[in-house]
Image 1 (cartoon, rainbow, N blue to C red):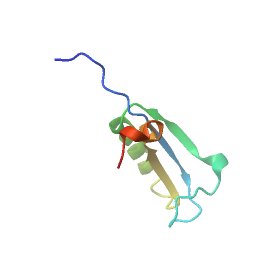
Image 2: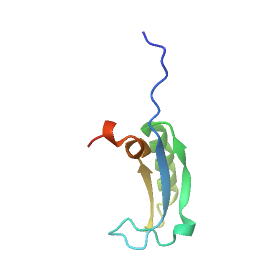
Image 3: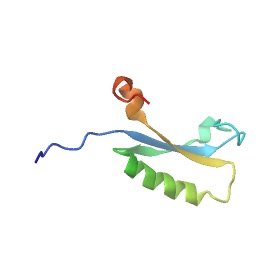
Image 4: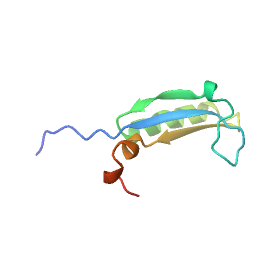
Length: 79
């Protein structure tokens, strides 16, 4: 059994009001909510879900999970 720590796969959770519901374009970049960085998808998903549920009354507000590890090491994370 290996005692190596799990590989860190960074994920970023961001959200805010969209200018148009058919596009992922924020209405005001100065007001984008940068929630935080998380070491894996599961942790990011938990926070994303909480933030998304807290804004359910505003149809124009969306939260996203950005897979930063895919941007940092694109050669190892091909779709």
